[in-house]
Image (tube, rainbow, N blue to C red; front, side, top):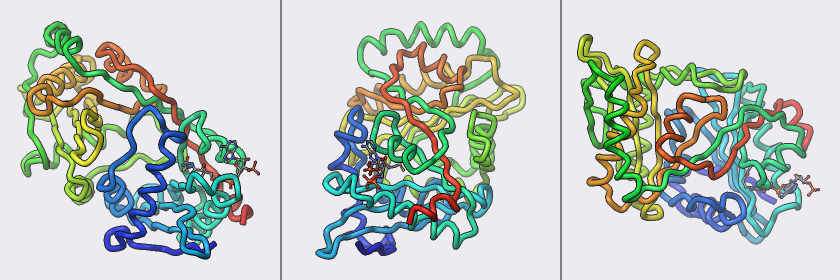
Length: 337
Ligand SMILES: CC(C)(COP(=O)(O)OP(=O)(O)OC[C@H]1O[C@@H](n2cnc3c(N)ncnc32)[C@H](O)[C@@H]1OP(=O)(O)O)[C@@H](O)C(=O)NCCC(=O)NCCS
């Protein structure tokens, strides 16, 4: 088996090999949602989350057949002792030690970058979770993925949900925009992203602080992915502060009818005014005209995140799957080689 690093920004052939492995195994690995499109995988492999460096490696058999791949994110600001790894093995090459070999390889790279802990995640019940347990990883936080069915039944409930939320949301105005963050809102949007710091997370994970450079990197990834992005914010009338934000992305290259909830956050000073519900209702009203083909919206919440889950449950989200975060000391993973 050869394991070679490649640049997903320029190496279309290896990028496509990774994407094809993910798509082919989707019915086994993650059957309740459509597979990611090539532009989505390109964006994540090439640009990651907020511009942090990452490495992509492809494993091939002697004849050049792709066996597996991994992406290792090596953050440079927060999480400087952690490496985030996602690995995939081709459906026909599983249970032959390829995954274990790739994880040990990733540990070697993480060690060179002076990381002490590998972090990753997998769907509970899927091969990834069994694999993580088998290699000795420790289970951390659980996340639930919920799906909202969008259609006439939901749209009929929106006026009532809006009226109820508005009773507690006096003194706030809504502002919405498509695409990139307008220049005058960049600082406020960074603050809203940073407000996620107090959302539940694993103890070893350091929450990230957002600044304009990091936001620009994340938005550059969205441009590369070609998503259509929608943002709705609540502005506090008295101070002009942005109090809450929700964002949804639509992937034109993906399965028609699906949309992806991004952040929903309310800053600490403005919680308790039902702004989360108000913004989500306003977003659904907007999408009904801007993206009338949407039939499902998926969203992820940490299992302990009661307030966000309550909003999603009231809207009608149903749980599709649970995901588990895992961590493994680099030292332990090195010994798997
Ligand atoms: C998880 C994954 C990478 C494992 O790759 P692999 O090459 O099959 O892994 P290995 O052959 O090295 O398996 C090592 C051990 O993990 C356990 N394991 C792996 N897959 C398993 C499964 N489907 N069911 C039960 N145990 C499993 C077994 O104990 C296995 O040893 P054994 O085959 O001797 O019993 C692969 O299934 C995959 O690509 N899944 C989708 C993506 C993913 O979830 N990645 C991991 C999270 S980042």
